[in-house]
Image 1: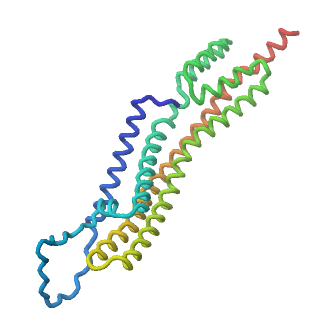
Image 2 (image 1 turned 180 degrees about the horizontal axis):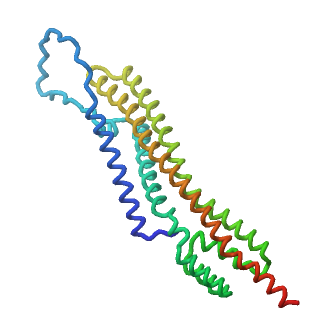
Length: 277
């Protein structure tokens, strides 16, 4: 189905809104994480005064944004792919919920118009009704009407082929959700591996306070990417299951209605044979 610019803009806005909500949720998880138990207090040691002209080091936080922006190029690439997958998942869920509906795929007014035209023996009016309401259902009916002169068996074969093609088109759109549900955890696992590699690398290269900061950011990246990947996968798989079942139900209803409408063409074949004789 074609999308108007307003519908495309609405899908993009809602997708980025959903991604922002996910980021806030993950950030709240990090903020509510309990701090590690403090060790036994040691005797205070006098701190060396900073040298003249040297600024005191600032403590770096480890919030969600610090983790995203504080990683290396590979970590940032993983985060970008996770955010892109999250936006695609939200957009596909909204698209599936809005377009894979009974009244969108098989409009009731089209069923009524085609039934009235066929009962009156006006095949041209039935074709005009299909052309006026383009969509999967009208494509299936048009495939049968365009082969009415070839006989009823050819009509049934044409309808079956067109139904299989429209079914494949619908399921291709739904299957993208399944892809997002599988890619999300894989990207999370990739972020976990790269985060642990960075964590061990920081132990060998950094020293002092910089080592602790880099180690905390690397480990946080490893854990956050796993959480985000699962947050993408769970809604995607659930939505894929519901939308796929809904699409299968609509397709079965559409095929049954198609066969019910074109069964009157069997008599048209007999009348045509009698006229030719």
